[in-house]
Image (tube, rainbow, N blue to C red; front, side):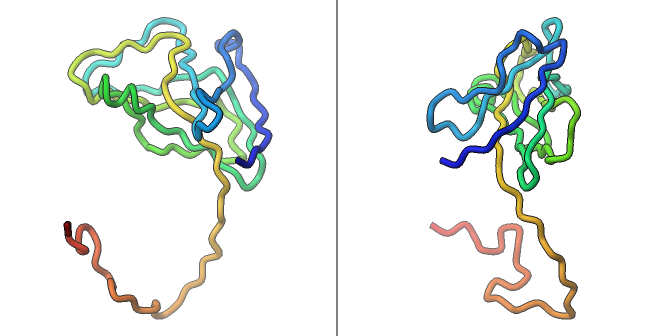
Length: 151
């Protein structure tokens, strides 16, 4: 597994929270925590940006992806909007997580709760080249279910 150094700055409202951490030695995503000052009630259908109390500095050529935690999704209907959310290498603001409650009951976000996962991934930048025609394929322009459901 490749490793990359990521600088993390704790903000005052997240100073006693732990840094993003991996639950197991082979976890792809590091858990990130809620740096809310008081319990935050997320009602069914409601969304909110939850602060994490950290800023990060990624090396050039990398991004951080913010993804939902499967346990929150299956047990409570809590997931991340704009998922995966992208944090670019040149962003230096606080990491925020956009959570939405797709469940049927109000969900309470507590300080220090694991609310999302952060994946660090390499980025490939495209060199765009305008052409008059594209190389044909067997699929062509078929999309949105055009390949069938097959069994």
